[in-house]
Length: 343
Image (cartoon, rainbow, N blue to C red):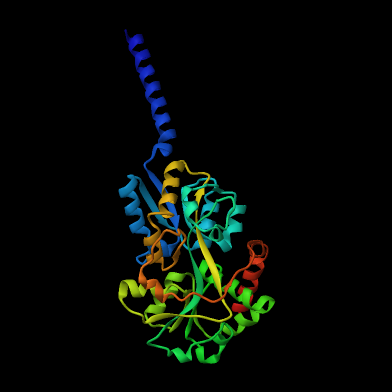
């Protein structure tokens, strides 16, 4: 009897161990939660993150662990460092100027979302759909109309280096921010190989150079400087949520650099079907919330925008650089920028 009981106990112990082991192995694939990495502004108080996640939960019943993972550059670095121990399913906010780095990481999986049918072809910057566009806009300088008169505004990037703007401009570091990187590329588009001359003069007018857009714009709205780097669409937020036209965009005749933000599915995801549902939601139901909170244009052509977007002037000229040119030279440009700005 003791021998029989020992055999039964051993049998059940082994069975339980197998079941426990099996449950541990399959738990990621049956989890009702996905993890989404997004840039800080998307997740912050001004961003659409919380509202989008709640609406997605109500529609699908799927939980989203939304992680604020820095700016676009920091997010991409984070998922690369986690390659051997991946944590995220979806990454929100890799811009088209960072696209080649994302592709070369080999971390993103192609996803031909049905929502792409409603997105114009000129916004679909990845022909393999590893990054799907969810919003877009143009970089610009925004000014406080209560601190600086319209007739005193700069008329070009070159004019912005005028000594009369000393300590009146807030810039953003291109090494840590996609918005800061946008200005670096913008300066290349306008000045070509002479872009460092512009930066050498511009640094004297900068009150400070912040690590990210959120801190720069927070300082700007707190009144620390009357001009900051942002987007042509930034005034939309203030019109919609603060009922003020105090903050307005400066348009340069020479043109403005464009940016398209993408969302990507990670190959390592254990919840790909749920992750795809989130991406589809981002490209459809969430478009208006993203557009109004981010103060950016939605990519889905079916999205109807509120009248506040009338306060977002569109540039007469949109500038761009070839993605391969950026990929091949970006490290050099950043090193050159660092050398100039540190002197």
